[in-house]
Amino acid sequence: MNIKVVGLGIIAIMVIVGGTIFFGNTGSKESQLDKIDSQYEKDLKDEQSKSKVIEKEEVIKKRVETPKKLEKIEEKKVVQAKRAETKKELVIPNGFKKAPLLEVKDINNNEFNENNFTKIYDNTMLNVYIDNFLKKNVKSKIRAKLLVKIKHYIKNGTVVIKKDKDYNVYLEIVDYNNVKLLNIGDNLAKSSHIYHFEFNKAKLKESEDVNLFLRDLDIAIQEADAKNLVLVGYTDSVGNKDYNTFLSYKRAHALSSKIEKYDIGVKYVIRGEANPIATNKTAQGRAKNRRIEIFLGF
Image (cartoon, rainbow, N blue to C red; front, top):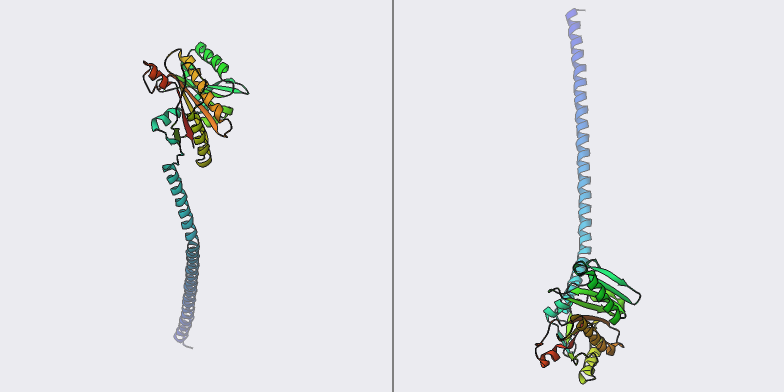
């Protein structure tokens, strides 16, 4: 056989086999790529389908929740509006009027906070606190003397020794040792009745004013839900300041004895000679200054 012919035959066979392998591999790769593309498209469709399901679920959830949320928001608005309206239009019972802002501030001056006061006497019937500033700046002998007088005149309750804006010392007393009642709040109504006393006397005169006040108080407790009663005691400027302070207390206590039957917290603000409403230079002016003013706390 011719060597050339044999060589050409071998070459032809190699070309055929090589082509088959090449094209076979190429076809295989194309087939694999098609499979990958197909799987990718399938996965993509699955993700889109899941995403649509989630979005649909969220839409349904919002449709359900939104009315409930709106309903709660509306309910909250109604409650807030009622509170604002109640605060804005305080119902004042007969015989009382809304207390002037300055007098409310005066009564609530340095509201009781145990961090600002030190207890200097502790007894089952009587507790005494003093403003930290006074404790630091008033001599111990003077404090001791004041405490002796407090124990002599005041037999039960919580007594707080305070100072006003002019650093005058005054007392606040709460019956039943209820310290929380010292913070009355800013919703105060003032009685139209003011009680006056004779010089150096603490005895309450039986008068029509007393009966009218008790009637007004009864209405206030029943209809206006009054929680606390504040009795503010004053004297004229004649005599010793310390004596006048405790005379104020005796006068306020005399009036409070008329209201013991009512379930209402009583707070005394004992101011002595402070805040005169008339001149102390005349007998008529001093008579006006010897008074008890009455406030209701709601």
